[in-house]
Length: 271
Image (tube, rainbow, N blue to C red):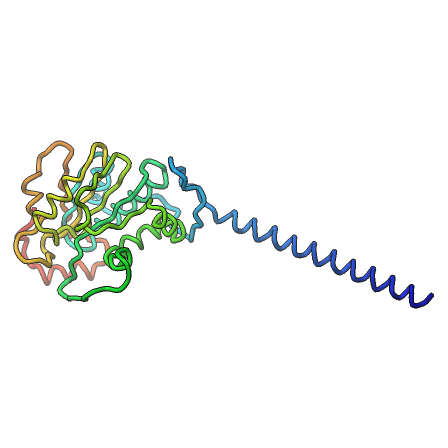
């Protein structure tokens, strides 16, 4: 009799332990699901981008830090093709990247296309390992940082995998068309040749948004560069804006402004 009572107590204790363990496990699972759901963002896109895990990002809307940046941002919003030229540190790339991210998040566009000439700044790195995307990745790291800050790293990774953000070498642009649901940014355009710039500009379709950035004083190629050539050819065309930043528009740091003053003591070659 005592043995049967002891066996019943052990059975009851084991059942109680299993029930408690099940409840605890269920509670922990529910908490994890709540935490995961809090990290899901919706980009309100026309296609199927509905569940991208978002890293911490900049919640504040884009605000111009200088009057020149405000004019540049307004020009991008209102015109099809904008050339942003001027010294380093004026926010050309950041403003363009932030506006592209904003348009993608709001569902105004379906894709962001980032490109630049694959030219090193005075140093030959040789053949880079990996596939085409891995080889080109170092050239658009600066833009990826901008997009990470505006959208979150997880969302950017998702968009890259699904073609919502595309990083394409300039050499592979032939045959492509930028449609009305595209926001295209060509950075470091001073390193294009006139032929490359013509190739790029003739990809523009109706309604596309295209921004071309660069500093004609920092060209790393020999001979005429495509940025300077395009500005002289296209200035004054309807829908085309050439926005020039000056040294006083540098926002990166006061030291950068002083350094550029020492390296470029005159204003020759300005537009």
